[in-house]
Image 1 (cartoon, helix red, strand yellow):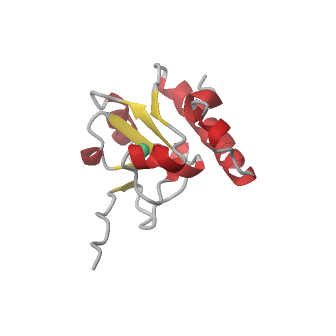
Image 2: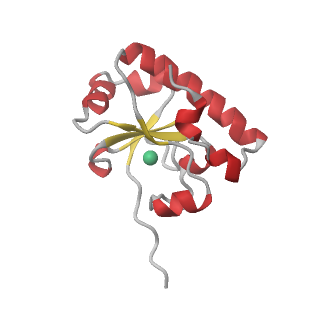
Length: 132
Ligand SMILES: [Zn+2]
């Protein structure tokens, strides 16, 4: 079973969770553990909660769902989990996740509990708008 500290990694001590983030985290953990059960293999969270400078260090998107406990990256060097999730057309939807396109995630699976702006289930992050 995936525990909250696997996602928080003590970062909430420096950047405490708001009530909204706490409820996001509960929803995320619930969905992850349903997935974990169905997948039936270990799942290592390579990146979870990324508040403040942690998101900058990870070169995360400026509005990354990692910042509000709505996203995790799962270590997936062979894309075994990615491929399993994509093997059935409704699988991601049934588990309640949206996934970043595997092309952008060479060794991990990025899952989030709320849709990206495009609403696309397997989405691509558009490059940031160039500053004029
Ligand atoms: Zn991610």
